[in-house]
Amino acid sequence: ARPQVVVIGGGYGGATAARYVRMWSDNRIDVTLIEPNASFISCPLSNLVLGGSRRIGELTMSIDALAGKHGVRIVRDTVSAIDADKRTLALAGGQTLSYDRLIVSPGVDFMWGELPGMLKPGAQDSILHAWKAGAQTTALRAQLEAMPDGGVYAMTVPPAPYRCPPGPYERASQVAFYFSRHKPKSKVLILDANDDVVSKGPLFKKVWKERYGGIIEYRPAFRTADVDAASRSAISELGDQVRADVLNVIPPQRAGSIAVRSGLANANARWCAVDFLTFESTQANNIHVLGDAIAVAPLMPKSAHMANQHAKVCAAAVVDLLGGRAPGAQPMLTNTCYSFVSDHEVIHVASVHAYDADKKTLLVVSGSGGVSSGPSPLEGEYALNWARNIWADTLA
Ligand code: FAD
Image (cartoon, rainbow, N blue to C red; front, side):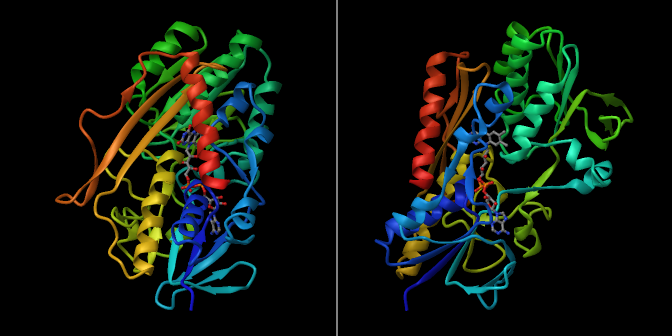
């Protein structure tokens, strides 16, 4: 019988893994991809929708080429349960599928229980996260457009680790860019649970001071403990209450709920620990976990770029294992995260991560990577080309 691989999630990690298992096995392995959404909507570049220089339609793509060109069987459904002993999974639609190897890339889910006010009826309809690109992104943009000049946009940043370390600070820059052009009396207030800017701190702070000085205010160590949706207020663990005209709550995060429910989130009941040679779960045999859902190696961001790299190490290992060969022993991964600070100027952070056989983890190669010296339009070109390349590498 032909080996069967099933992939949960058609985002950056899952779609890439599905595509590469097909390509690197010369189509000898059958791959089934389970994804509820009809199209792929990119989180990278979605902050530009809030800044007003992009529309969500430009970030929305079809996943059909994975079927037509690569022969991936796509099932539009949600996985409701995994049975690791029987090597089967159940779909919400009622079907049961069996697998030889399962690849799980469900992204993140939100820990709403940490913010009790967000569980009240209607709270999540008016207080948006926009941390999964799509309807929430356009709805948050509409709230910003409707806000009168002189208003306050406040964003809460959750404790690290969370999806996309520089993402909240790029978002603040984008909203400030929009205000600087259209609502110059308005404010951007960053309520950060962390003690300092989590990624590219000195660069972001310089940009905020020089370009958005009267607009952005940064408040570190504001650990949001609750939200009052009715008054659009964030409440800190010390009891400070901050009211905003537009309140954007980015909640604390953990691995996608299918991973948590299946017992794969064995690190603090939040993230899934993996063997970095294969991305196989340390909890269950024959199940691999990728992308934002994993317990990351030191200094490894939860990024689309990293999810793409996990997917390739995992796909190569799965093809080897199903072909009766030992997987390669020296994975080397790269990451670049670009952040737009205006509609065309960008800063980046880059790193290279190599497998350390003694420590059994991926470690940053000393002297590799680094950050920009400052924002530039040239890096803006690089960022757009990065996006085109990764979309092609994931979906084309
Ligand atoms: P996702 O891409 O979210 O894919 C998960 C998929 O799994 C989803 O399609 C979901 O529908 C599906 N799924 C979940 N549960 C189930 C289930 N039970 N059954 C079936 N399917 C399921 N990264 C960068 O590298 N560069 C950037 O510039 C960048 N900018 C960002 C900006 C913002 C505002 C945000 C929010 C994120 C950004 N990121 C960026 C981070 C990037 O989006 C994530 O790291 C990446 O999407 C992770 O890939 P993933 O496969 O883990 O999850």
